[in-house]
Length: 264
Image: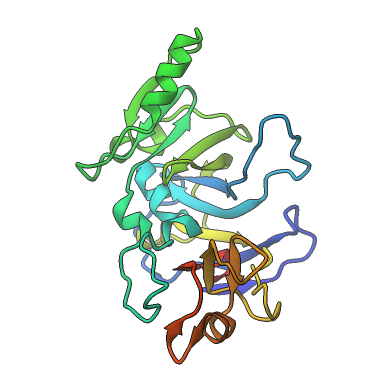
């Protein structure tokens, strides 16, 4: 993957990428169309408080019109998918391979009054059910349902620039916007294997260690009695040197590996 710096861009906070690893020309110009989707960082909204910061774009993804909504979902990068659900403060060296995305696989994409849910795993839940029930009790809707892995982009009716919603991990919500629809051009990659591709990512600031404020955080602690912050973020060195003596835990706290968004 190559990184390009381009001047005078409309989206100056983005780092543009070239994700064209394969050179085979198995797509015909003018017979396929491309869909560009901008995915935004999740943000918290508190009732009664005005959010002074607008939504920030996380990444821009390019797909083919005959690809499924699940192809878009699988390409979206979010730190909440990589979080470790088990607490590891007693033994931070244990090999933890179970991520939240392995345990909580449900999710939906809301487009034009329709909730498209992911049912690829038989244990997946319909996150939209409680929303649709609430809407019906307030005379809103009606809303339709669909299956994410059975819906192609070419079957959708969308509005360019209009915000839709992707929700996963229970309550992690991302705005998604269809920013461009066009036919395949000679300057585009003509290899099917290059789609979907990530065209750009945000140049977001990293979360730094709250102790040294120098290295990027790799650990997060909760209910830590020996620090004034809850939660508190630590780099690898500060986490081990401050919270452990000769490998033994000092004080009471809960610890989890932390994956910064800039590391994705």
